[in-house]
Image (cartoon, rainbow, N blue to C red):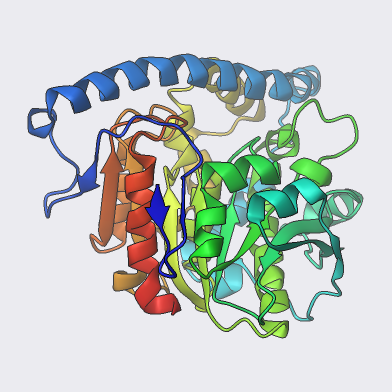
Length: 398
């Protein structure tokens, strides 16, 4: 049970073991010898479980890549043409987020309707589902017309939990890959607790997920990997653009303080937004990826298909890495001040290994870094780090 600042008491939603983690020291994440036997046991067992999950997820992603790999093999060329990769690499080399991710030029025209009763019961408050037409245009001119045709993806969706006494400081949440359902994220992040602590909450849907998935998609998020490296780059660019439009919407309702957190792919996206838009009061990437190219090299069998794709297209590893820097937060200086950045990672995580979070920590001038002894999904001592998030946010948001 946990109390809000107003004295309300209620349970955090996810029943996870309460073996605590801690903030990192000046040297970074703990060495194995620094851990208690309980922490070592959970790190090791959760890492084994994560390896199984990683293989399953890599198989799903790999299956989504096969049709394009087969087409590329028949034509003896990759759909990720060399011109597109050079284009992204040249943009990345500027290290200028304003050039790489132009801001929306017009405010969104938002449609709003009441969410279903289950959402309002979970939040114990007023919940609206919002949508608007994306104003995003593909960064690479060669695929703009193609991207305009993704009509379902080009409608932005989010869920907004609002208090009745006017706009409150708002915590925005970006889900992970395949993890778009609002109910799941509301419970996973114990968002009713944050809501009762005084935050309004907004759950943002990434491109190609949930209601943005294209018809016939075998799973939510399929479109991120369906269209090759150029498609992934454009999905990231659209995620940034559409979230900035969502911030425009929040400001139009009177919200003047916005914080952002995200998990996994959402952590990657939130880290990049922190380098693109200076309106964020604080940012908290959780189990973030920061260098997908390096991460996928360990993801069997997807890594084999990525290698085949490079071979068919005559794309070198170096040019692939140079292009992927376009959407990496490690390529840009953060705009959110150091004391308003908090990174959360799991020592047993093998989907987004803690080395990824530590690389972001180094790039972010060794800001606050909190670790827990679980994996990508099992966030052991999650109540502990959720309270850490709340303590971290309150000075900036209230």
